Length: 214
Image 1 (cartoon, one colour):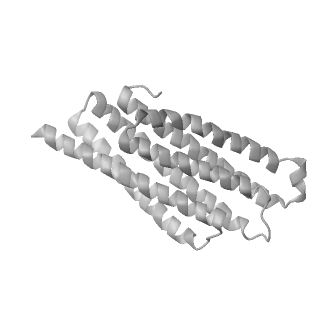
Image 2: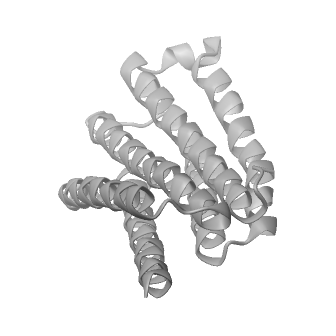
Image 3: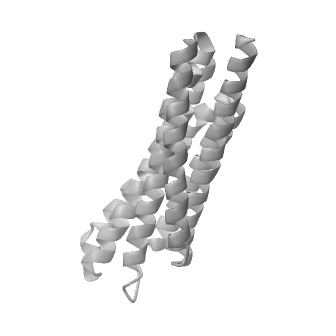
């Protein structure tokens, strides 16, 4: 009876992890709507979703630790449970970045005009959203090939960050107001971190399946 019960517990954790991932993806999409579409009314909903992310994250962590303690799993089950603690943390951090971006956007739109570089930020945001989506698909399907490819896709986000950072800090940008540029620096830094955590999620999927992160 223990083995079937343990398997049901693992399946419940998998389901809860995917539910958390879907909620985190929603926070990212809401954040995109705030920054790119100017939908400032979405901020309240985003903050409520973030509170739910935190609640689910803490519950998932507690449940995983309890199962680890009670059952002392081995091999792939142990790798899954150990990785789940990190996966849930990665997802929680991604949601935090989404909130920070929306908060910066709220201040950014207090100005009459936004910097010309916003179009490039939009493209970077869309790439970051794709990375998050790919990482969640890799978790859902334990897809090692997709998981390994995320790091390559993250290179484009890193390149976006370097290019936009250089533009925002260039002498040509000095004609624009300082605070909007600083706020966009906050935005792209958080987008870059989103990509980093999506990459870590991919590495953890590889570890669950193969026992090593690549």
